[in-house]
Length: 411
Length: 197
Image (cartoon, rainbow over all chains, first blue to last red):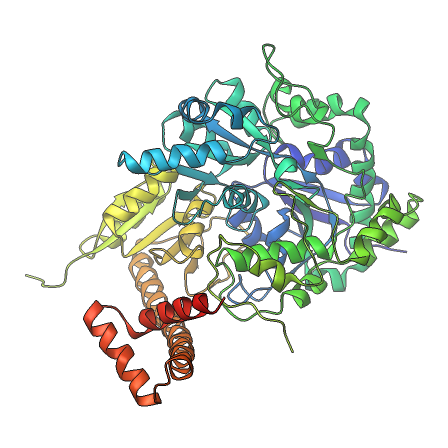
């Protein structure tokens, strides 16, 4: 079976979780499937989206919510993105400046030692600052349609804070975030690796909570392609998904993670030292004097727990957050978008051909049991469950929101 | 003496050659402010202070997402954005318009083309922005009408008022309290439904 297209250009943002692309190339997985892949580093998510939409690149390392966002009214051009592969779960964290860490600890020492750390101490800091008439704090997230943005907002909202009123939210690219913190322009941020480790290592800030403690097992990055491309290149698409799935399986083995850090340290990929890349990958702290927060088996999940199955539930959850925070302003059938943006059949075919069995079948029984009452696989810091059968009721249950359109059930 | 105030254009581009083409192309028509050294919060406060008529940004700039957010989230202070693309095969140079915000310029940028491109971007942006505002306004109007109707119904039901009396009462309250009828209707709704529980 010949491939429709052998040469592919793929765009990525230099982050630790672009690893599957670097590994697929360096370990020969692309080649094994007859693909000749060029990897292009891009400076921004906007650029990734524009280049993919306009056909400058064939596929991309993309923030999971961006795939669904491409289906919304007013989205870029007329191109819709689809994904047949989730590249990882989790992998982000919230870091605060040293000054803010101090202030939060003084405000509520107990709250700061609890795991997971909530925004309770931050709430106290914010009300004190308000009374004293000081400037509101500045919160940095990496892109409007990102799990970082939603994790940060969820974390704030869970403690009754309104991200659009109580703090100033700004967007800045991750490589500049630590610099912003150093110069006092950002007090708290949510970014992916290696940027939390960099901030810790450079003594700029303290990482206080991991994204998997806020939104556990939420899809993070996905392989995105144009819908039209997927339709006209089914064999190439399957080959690409298969090769990346092999790279993801390789990455799952802990003994390969140090080598992965070494691969990523090349200027072609992330271009940061192994000491900054490996903590997130091997689950060990970067700093000798204290255990870093990235010390967790599931800080960055590439493959296990059925991570690669593009799950409509995750898309639906992201879409509820877009409604919750006022990003969706036109009437939208979010269930329909969630159903069309992901191509789980392509993933299943790749998984079966690789004889992986069906990695989604792990814990099938417990999952089915959970599903019978509509609950999905993700876990949330406030103990809520997302009921994918009734996203409207779920949305209405949040006291903190900035909805600009009233949710209602279609039909 | 021209009475038309010059345009203010914010330029985010590290390439000095291109920056010069832009400055030359806009000479006499616009004041060009360079902003390639400001990022994140600093860049945003610069935009707030300057209130530029348009922003020109290099499409490879790491500040793209910051500018993008300016357009997307709650549409706080949106600005027309023009982007430079410098690539050989030119597929990115296809003109891409999203919510009337961006225009792409083909490479080989010439001084003569700068002003028309900026003017078109501003025009197009104004058009989309007006459409968007109309849409928002009609949505808000519709919502207000619904709230007012419900409050009126409650007053008629619980206070035995006629429709006319209920409306007059709300209008009077609005005038006395310096609020909109919608706000009055909303407080009536929350007070009367609270008493119900």
